[in-house]
Image (cartoon, rainbow, N blue to C red; front, side, top):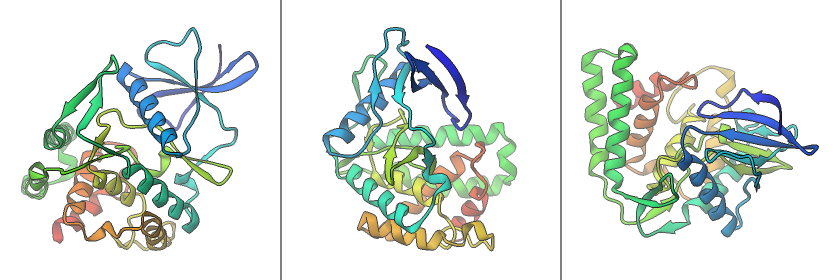
Length: 276
């Protein structure tokens, strides 16, 4: 295996373009084995339900925390290619994924075993991590009073009891969607959870197109956000904006990711949600 270059866009794993016997592939190196298992199981579920996914390849020298994926030359992500058409497709794919149902909430362990979980416990762990990160980063400039208001805003999430469990991506932002011949391909599944509340995915998606729904910006870069969101909702075929828990999830995602390099509008989103 020859490493051609490191792919710089990855935030949570090391990704390389490699060559094996004259063919180029993507090699992903994770911290934990369960991330490989989760990615493969997610891809299997997508394939079973006729949803396009990346192909996996076997290679004798792969480590247990590595996967080899098909390489799409000159591939682009939805992140840099927002359009009404693509956002409608995004909504359609999201709906198909969320229509895949399971009997319980679970994730995969390092040995491929299903680990049963309680959804509210999963959210409690995300909340604990979010506020720990905030403390490590001087509360991102929020006052102690504002931090308490954010906690109060998020606490109702711990009372959510799900009646059904959808397949969810868990990190369904536009950078995790490749465009191949006008088709959208989902990848990079979050290993923290496999099934749960579909609203979590929708919250992550809306944050990518916030103007008009979560912020009000004059920046021309966000001028088409409202059209893109409407196209997404049209594709999803359900106006989830009125769901009372949606904004709670949006707050959780925005506050929990303020330490990442993708949080440009997140503080504005948080302040606007606190005003509602």
